[in-house]
Every structure is written in structure tokens, then in C-alpha cells.
Figure 1 (cartoon, helix red, strand yellow):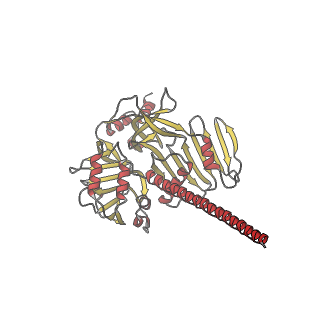
Figure 2 (cartoon, one colour):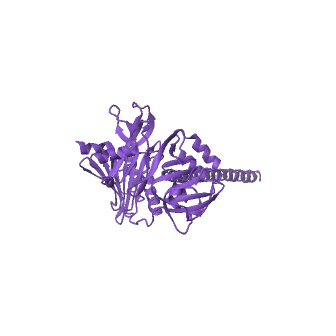
Figure 3 (cartoon, rainbow, N blue to C red):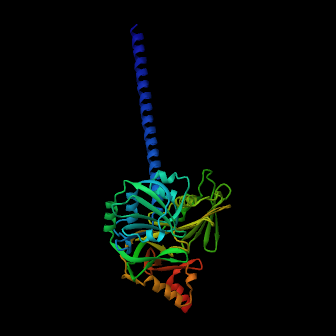
Length: 437
């Protein structure tokens, strides 16, 4: 009998031990699973936040103009903080109503005293602006609008925001609430760069003319040339894990990926320029908003840093959108043949041209301030050597990307005027040299 009791007790002890072991395994497995789920959720949230943050940065306005009480126009900038970003965050707190046709006079509004103007170099979509500013009423509007400029009052009567098409001179207005003019005035007062300008038309486009010579600081930056393997991984990999084929051709390497070799990445090692063709994307964007959204998705997939990249221009007929890097409020030219990115969509696929050269950190510049002539003086120089005003399609003050002669990993950014003639952007001094040589 005693043996039977001992045997039963032994069986109970073994059963309890097994039960405890199983419980421990279940508990620890659940904890692992829960930690994994939390990590995946956090990672996904961070990626979404980063993408939205990039989107908002890329579609910031590129010019901020303050119109004073006496109707003087001043281009302003703040070297300490991004004024455009601060304004965007302030406007997110406003409540926008529907945008309706306005009967305001265009010339009067452009010269209206005590106003702030936020300018884009090319057309932007009102619905897309609503997305940037997290304004659901604008995003859900029945009809989208195209505009190039935003104007609102800087005095206590900040109740209306105007969206202006400088080409057609059409104006739309949106009533706003919860807008505090004191916040805007504080940002304007903090701006540490201001220069007097005049806004005039050149071949149908309202552009910023500098009344007097402008002194700008050159900059030098340490640059990063990203390894092409980074782009192969980001752009050519797919769920089928198909092999990547390679072909060399005249100083270029072409990589083929995808199930049917329907993705190609061409790397130009001499100029650090790349072209990615994706023949799986054949849908054409049907609106400006769709073009700008698809353009952003394309450049975001490349995985280059987008902090200093801004929207520069678009062509709805050609389904093309371009982006440039900006420094201290001015665009960089000659970073590549096309800027930072150029995206095109057609019926056979999409094409992204981009540079592997990205700005990292500023380093002390070796150059003194550069004095640029007044805009009319610059244009007259071009006309005097044989160009006509009709040939000058566009211009902008920007930075010329010049590789440092002593350090291959440093680039010098030198202020100058860039002028668009024959559909090409070039330093105005290069255009002058073509005629005088």
C-alpha cells in the first residue's frame, strides 16, 4: 500500500512539474510574440511618420516675401531655423474653410500692405497643400485648384487666406479661424536676412527682381556619395528574389532586376548620376495632385535624404516633375544634369534620374561674400551680348555646385544667377561667355 501511495505521489509531482514547464513556455512565448508585435508596429509607425515628414518638407514654399506698411516687398529668410517649416507648423493649427472664387483685384492683392506671401517656383495643388497642412476641408474639396502663391494678412485681421495663380491671375480665398497674427509677426521679426525686391513679369511668369545688388555667403559642404548597392537593394529587389543581372557599357553599369528584367538601374560612375526605369508602373497621373504625389513616392523610394530637397517644377503634359536641393532658401544647380531628382511617367513605365551626391554637413568656406548685380542689370548684360528678352524664359538666384579642387569629398556652393534659355538652366556668366568668346 505504501509503495502505491509513493507511486501516486511521484506521478502527481511529475504532472505538476510538467504543468509548470508548459506554463512557463506558454508565458515566455507570449511575451516574445507581444514584443515582436510591438516592435513591428512601432517600426511601421516610424516609417509612416518619416514618409509624411518627408512629404511635408519636399512641398514647402521656397520663397517668403513680407510686404510692409508702405508696400515695400522684402524677401526674408532665417538662418537659425527653417522659416518655411515654422510657418507650416503654425498654419497647421488654423482651421481652413472651403476655397471659393475671389473677386479681389490681383494687382491690389499682390501689393497689399502688411501681408505675407509664400511662393512656389511652379504650380502646386490646393488639395496637396491641404495634405501638407493637415486640413481635411481642403483635401476633400470637390474641385482642386492650381496656384503658385499664398497671401494672408499679418495684422489683427487674419481671417482669410488667398491662393493665387500668377499666370492667369485667378484668385481663390478660404476663410480661416484660430489664426493668430502675433505668431506670424514673431516669425517675421526673427528673420535675419531681408532684401528689397520687386515682383515683375517675365514671359508670362511673375518673378522676383532684386532692385539692388545682393550680397550672399558662399558655403562649403561635406558630401556623401552613396554606394550603388544601396540603390540596387532599394529599387531592384522584389518578392520573387530574382537575380540581378549586370552589364557594362561605356563607363556605365546597368543592373537588371525584377521577374522579367522589367527594372533597370543605370549608374554613371563618372558623374555620380543614376537612372532608374520601372516598366511595371504604366498608369499616368490624371491631375497635378496625382503627379506630385507619384513624384514624391518615386523619390522617397530611392531612399536618399530629403531634408533639403524641394519641389522645383512640373510639366503636366509631359508628366514630369523635378526637385532640387536648397541651401539657405536658394536652389542648387549643377548638382547633376537635372537637379536632385527628375521623375517622368509614361505609358511604358516611369523614369527617375537622380544623383548619388548628397549634402552632409557644412564646413568653413574659403570664400568671401559674393555680390550679385541687380536683376535688371543682369538681364541687360545678356541682352547687350545678343540674347533677346523672349529667349530668357526664367531665372533664379541659386548656388553653383563646384567640386573643391583640394578635397574630393567637399563641394563649394557659390551664389550666382541661373537663367533658363533654350530649355537649359545655366549660370548667366556661362551664357555671357558663349556670346563673347
